[in-house]
Amino acid sequence: MQETFDIQAFADVQRLIVVAAHPDDLETLCGGTVTMLTQRGVRVFSVNCTLGDIGTQDAATTRPALATTRLLETEEAAAILGIEQVHSLGHHDGELVADLELRAQIARLYRITQADTLITFDPFWSGQIHPDHRAAGQAAIDAYMPAKMPLYRPEQLREPGAGLGCLQRVFLFSTDREPDVFVDVSSVYETKLAACLAHRSQFPQDMKSLDWLQGMDEEHGKAIGAPRAESFRRMMVW
Ligand SMILES: [Zn+2]
Image 1 (cartoon, protein in one colour):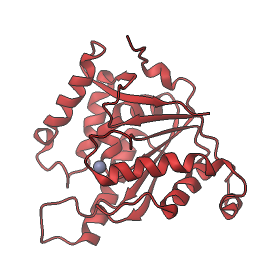
Image 2 (cartoon, rainbow, N blue to C red):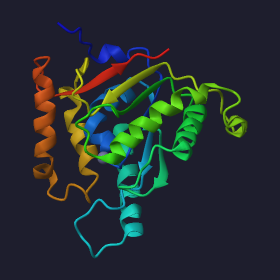
Image 3 (cartoon, rainbow, N blue to C red):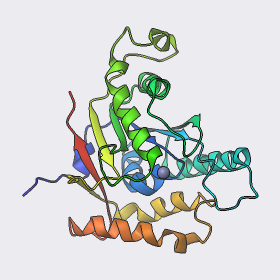
């Protein structure tokens, strides 16, 4: 049987960077784990590759207006979770590509934040239907190695506080490729839900909008006999 791990998998984390595609990805997929880590004093940096500027069925709104709304919602959610910084890379929702520009943007943040741990999407899960999720995960992993090399984009290293990338651990979420870390988030679930609900543009019906999420977290919880859990797959890196 596969060995599984709990929150102790994050025991040595001091600085965590989460690379997501859209505002609300972090909150829904690892908001509980992030809460437990910030409560422990871990510094958390959130990265949204896109503006989330097509996330509506209201054709009367505009993309810039929606982007502004979603940035404000992201800041509100970050305050609830104890996240230190929110970075938006400004790409258009639904059009994210894991190209060299995106790789460099993410590598720069690895260098500036000096994060030791990365959480991102599993780009290798064949069931990942959202192209932005696949691209964000791919670019985040692709930036891991160049960020550690001094000849890669050396101008980034001259920014205040920047140093060579020092990531040591990678955890992938949104995967069904044999997740091996299950974090019981039951004790902080109210905080997770509050952060999710800060995204009012996405969840306008309050808790009713989050039935799917609670169902998913309950399903993850079954693997470890907990009411609700978040799951990850550890990626072996060196
Ligand atoms: Zn998303």
